[in-house]
Length: 320
Image (cartoon, rainbow, N blue to C red; front, side, top):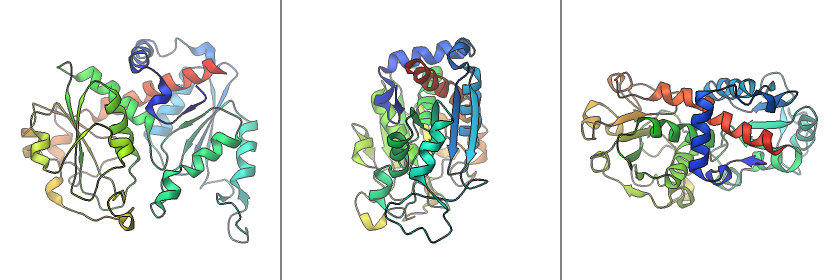
């Protein structure tokens, strides 16, 4: 596996899931694969779970790890071609990337959407430069449009906690005070479409995700109707994807607090489990009582980030 961005990159899901549970039972089984190998983790944006889980996964596999915070301790990087670099950016990504590649065997990249230029974001401009110029296998630690390590961990969590063969999984929009990217909901929808679940996506009108990620999921604008009989509720805010109105891309066009997941919302479900990728704004996305309830899976979900990342890094090491 030379790159990991979308669900197709992982190959057959049943094999990937079997590998995930094998690693969960013995996290150090494949330490030999990473001996004398180095992972470089490059962060253009803040992180907690991704940083810790990815580093832990690499260490479990015997790797050395270098962490680079681009915005804290490195030269400011220019990402655009053709720019006269007479501002505060001292180095171009096109030189920085191959230099980074000299010092490692694998590269993980985290770079969020700018939320001002949809075409630029959805072209995955920064990530694709790493894939093209680093000379190393590259995996996404959340990008402008996707967060596959999170979605993989979500699927592992659902598989561990489902009580029926084909559970009903609902991805629900919830309000937020800041404009957030669509990466997590995009990947969640993409991975659930590839899995054996009944996926429903619910959000206010105008917040439609890109059809590339929605796939065969049912879109329901009535949140209560969407929640009825659900086995899993995955709450996540995203800013306007600009699908129906490109001028709205990256904007907050709804702050409807009736979409906040509370006890009443969860009562509509089939004793549903609550999920969120974290960090979460309490009493905005979800109320305290729901996230602290026995049906909340946010901590097991976060723990499984180590497992999903272990599978990805293992596959990449095996391909070196």
